[in-house]
Length: 457
Image 1 (spheres, one colour):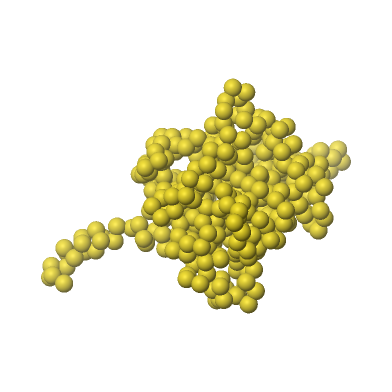
Image 2: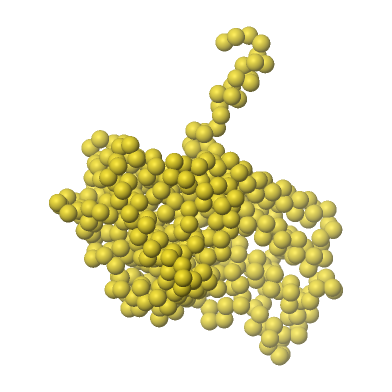
């Protein structure tokens, strides 16, 4: 197991990372990325055990109880630990699905997973390609590099080129799990490539952006201030990948296996995050209503009732996905596909309703309230406190802090990131519809309807 300091040392490895146009010399020293790296280091220290042989978050749950406990544990470890866990589970899921056709590749997958656990590595998921002209197939693009593809095959490996977009914390991990973003057809064998690439491999270039606030005082950003991770644009500029790191090469019929395996775990992660997030929005709505003195107003109570019903349904979908999990031949528990995808679709597609109700209950001070620094100013602070108070039982500072919390989580840069990623994480909404239809017991539903028609047809 690594300590936090060992993790920080491990990413000072010559990796090429750019942030806002500037090459980052040392991530730990960077004013934005350094904070994210130190947050990850804290996660390492949180579970460090000098007698342990691997981090407990990389354990593979074998039943519903283990799956439920692991979700909470991984969320508590932070974003990169969550991404690593879903990467490991993606590889194990895919391995089970390609066992019969690609036994050699499965051995490589299992070997890598064992090494990742032994060395306490962090893995990020590189799936979405640049894609170029969306109406054109990967193999027919005017620029063939719009999808990651093999440009050279050698006796000891392959050389790949292309780019992967919106990859959470790619610059802060150790390994890039590169997999096809969609199904491939005959003639597109070069695009059916799945492999593992070290972040510091020659030819890997990463461009980072972040929702982290640029303010020197972070108390007005209680959510995004202390917990911010970059999103990465990963460029693969003729990167050599040794054979032992190649998990799929040219098998077009299997190109979707890795994407579908990742989708299952990403959507479970998204669903669990949105279940917690929905409960938080309900709590904020109730608190700001009390601070405003409107908690007993009929339309406010009605909005909160709608919010809590929505939050309960999201939680119910998560519980169903876990309770109805399936245990694979390798002993790993996998969440139910139907409830995971239907729940993720429902939660993501209705998220804006939760936010709209919260904003309507809270009022315009979400985006116009003075800062907490103003509150401390001896000349204007007393007036800010006085006029920020509404309910005489709740201090003006409490109400002010609630406004800033609501703004940060739902109406500022982080809130915009949250809105988009809720929809896009694990694939867009349509992807979840497709998988939901695939797993829905349509035959049973149709049979029940046929019974009531009364006439055979």
